[in-house]
Image (cartoon, rainbow, N blue to C red; front, top):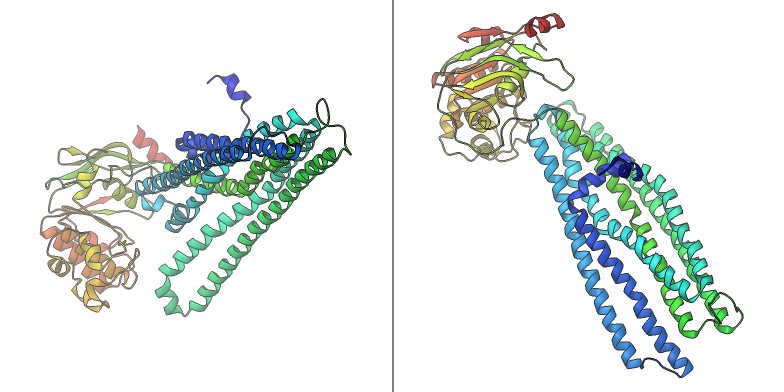
Length: 572
């Protein structure tokens, strides 16, 4: 496409541009649906002509078509219109369903390949993918075909009207554009109201997820009433936003229906007085005939119908633009945070081998300075501690070793295998990941610990000193802890994570501050579980401030805080 062509294109808003990008794969299907529905509505002119000829012939006694023939032609055209409408509706609905599915897939795929800490809040993503993405469907199924009809049908019917009466054509020409003008004016208010509603939906979902996650703490603090009041306030806010959107929609529909009714009424008044002989102008070459008058009366409402359909679907466009813009922002935020290495496919773990890295440089965020890490290696059955002040990059290093952050330079090796997109799934299959904040899948605990793998779960629980945790839970292994491990303490959750790694036969354990914020007895139990994993051949890499944990390691790697001076030295 040439620059000159691009300059001639009408500029679009960021929201409209985002919506077009999302809808690009379904644009051909939507165009076909729009043209089919436009042809269907234009066929009404044929039905109106048949009816006008039949009725005019009965009035004048000089029938061009017999009533039976006219009825058959009218019904045949009606059947064709019904078929075209059904086909157009099916095409548009399929395209709408594909659009929603594609947006959901894009969001979930991008989030799956993004480190958890860098993603938008899970509640925000869930709200966007589940509730808000559905609002794209009415835009595709209704607004886009209506826009095509509004561009074609009124022009065709206006030309047919002008062929019989220039006066009636002037009435339609003046009244018709008033609908898009007022539709645009109302659309400005509707856009702002819809954006506020979208924001309220996301905020309410985030607040609800936060309160559910903290329900145990809220009960301990006696803050259930306050939390309930916060949710009620947020819910009332969403209710008010929704009612404002509906009020704008109903008001705009009333105004637009008024203009279309006035336009049809003016045509009817003109035709009526012209047929009575009171008005002798407005037709070409003589008075308006009965057939022409009936034809004009029948197509006048259809002239406004596409514009009314477009006005009714205008709020679908506004809502879809708000959703598309939010989805685009979420995708940009996810893309800016980098992606996890690998393809996320199931893979067989690599055999035990020394694990190490050389010349490693990692940038923890798009705006953050790069971090340079000293080289190290740990053998199977070995234990490496990583120490350093907060902010030195211990967690970043562990994330890079697990393939959760892409290194800017350097190598990470499992034996002779270099960590990259093609090997990450196999390397990660042999890693047990113990984050500072444990995470579980929302499933019975037996499934959350085994992840569907066969093995001796009881032995894994014994090795992790976690048997008493299961015994104290209502339902035991049938209990559901949720994503954050609700119902168990932080130390108990970490021991369960150790049991999961033991059951999986992990060959390398990456543990981030495993004893942070734990009392001495619980910390000892967590450390004993880690040492049990080492004793059966797993390599340990543990980032910690705890002197007891570091003392239990065979070697300790110290990471110093990195300043601009140290970065310059590393670059040299």
